[in-house]
Image 1 (cartoon, rainbow, N blue to C red):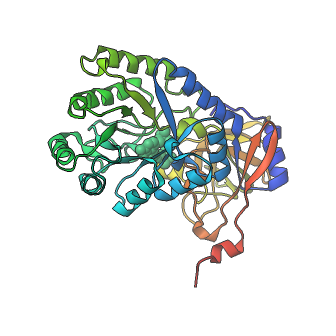
Image 2 (tube, rainbow, N blue to C red; image 1 turned 180 degrees about the vertical axis):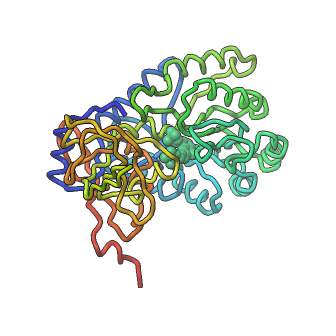
Image 3 (cartoon, rainbow, N blue to C red; image 1 turned 135 degrees about the vertical axis):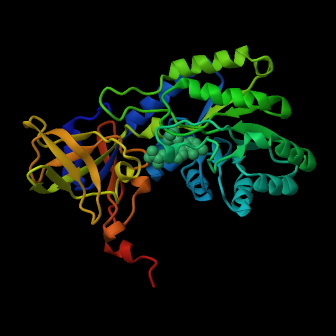
Length: 401
Ligand code: LLP
């Protein structure tokens, strides 16, 4: 939520490229990455950007250029990462529910792999035996994350192999001579409390003695970023301190040297992004004043999907009298962006910005109602560059016979 870019830069982008428009601020991404690196300097860590948050190829290239590694959730994301110039050793593929053929492709590409089912682990062992070090995604049975839809480590979650199935994992590893290099967990998204990560580690600590070739503990992503005014992010230096202490205090883990991996998505790109839209219709219904913009849940689904709060700015009338508005889209379905929100007076033609739109914004967008996906621009050193053209009518017909 904290703004970094001036209204003037945002409005300049709108003048040049129109609306609706996704805008990403490169220096904010770098600032977030640097906070992680400095916050975790007391530990041996590697960061892999969870690119499911935003895969625009220019953003991937930028993230590569600042030295961050990349985490992928599909083989196509792996291919995009390679295309963006990441070397295989800097790519991690954390799969779930996928055909084994995708894992074979990932092996051929030479990337790091975390496997999240006994079924694929067995196929992996039978085909590669000890030759290809691999990670196992464990379900630690911990409830964490901003809401149930983004909680992934609890005891009813599809993700990972339940920690209770350790003996099955062990016999598979033995039978097929697997080389287990990594233990992985990802308990959810929007996790503020550092103790949740420590709790996850406590679960992994119990497993460490069972995997003598272990080198990496991968604690996934999920760091919280502020969305509402006054909210704060996960305290990264405190988290690092707690993780270090937990390792040192543990009788077995403390004697071994593990590298800690993280897979941040939101932390790196959420705050860097804005969805810029124009107010098309004002509608005063007596009890509610609606401001409809030329966007909707087809472009930013988070408010409707997770009841997520996205801060709204009226860029073209920032000093207007504060009134209450409900900001909606133009989709033929309820697509409220903000309810009953105090905002400077909104008039038709005003430009609104939806903040925190960098993560899971464009990436989860669609052509619902046969509307075009927005263009995307990146601002770097004050320069605005187009990084994806707006859809056009041919795009709607592409691939249709
Ligand atoms: N690693 C794994 C294995 C994941 O499944 C995820 C996110 C991440 C890392 C990155 O989590 P982050 O740091 O971004 O919280 N669309 C939802 C979030 C879904 C997250 C899915 N997995 C939202 O907009 O809130």
